[in-house]
Length: 293
Image (cartoon, rainbow, N blue to C red; front, side):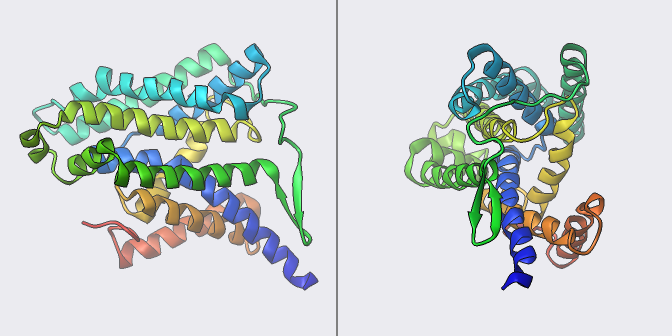
C-alpha cells in the first residue's frame, strides 16, 4: 500500500487540477459551440478575473470565496460588452469573417495584456491569508490542498448548474436551438444577437469563476492567462469543439495525464503528455472525444 501512495497522490492531484482545467475551458467551448468563434482573449479574461479578485480582496478584506459571485458578475458584464463592442462587428465582415473574428479576439488579447502590464506592472502577486490557503486534507496518506478541493467541487457544481440551465430553462433551450441552427431560430421569434450577447456573458462569467478559484493559490501576473489558455484550447479540442460536457471529460483527462507525466519526465516537461495524447486523439477522432464534425 505504501508503494502505491505516490501514484495515488499524483492521480488525486491530477484529478483535482483537471476539474479546474475543465472549469477554465467550458466558457471557451460554450462560445465556440454557440457562434463558431474561438475567443483568443479567453486567457486574458481569466487574468482579469484574477486581478479583480486580488483588487477586491485588498479593498474589502473579504475572502476570495465570498468575492467570487461579484467577480462572476463583473466578468458577465465584460463578456456582453466585448460581444457588443468587438465581436458583433467582426461577425459582420463580408470577406473572410472567420479570420476577422480571429484577429479581433487576438488583438483584444494583446490589448488587455498590454494594459495589464502598464497598470499592474509585470510583478507577481498573490492573495495572503485566505480561508483555504496552505491547508491540506489527509486521505490515508494522500494529501490534497483545500483550494484544489474547493476548485474541483465548484467545477462539478458549475457543470451541474449548466446541465440544469440548458435542460430546464427557456434560455437554455434557446441557447441550444441557436447552437443547432442560427438561421432557423429567428423564425420562432428568438433574438439571435441577444442570445449571442448572453452567451458571451455566460462564457466570461464561467472563466471569471475559474479566475476567482485560481487566485486563492496561484500567482497573479499579466501573463498568467497564457499559461492556462493553451491548456484550455487543448481541453476544448480534445473534448470536442462546442461540447460543454466534453470539456469536463477532457479537463479531467488532461489533468490526470499531466500529473502522471511527472512520474516519467521532469515536471518542466509535464505538458508533453497532454500534447501527445491530443495528437493521438486527433488522428483517431478529429472531432474530439464528444464532438461532432
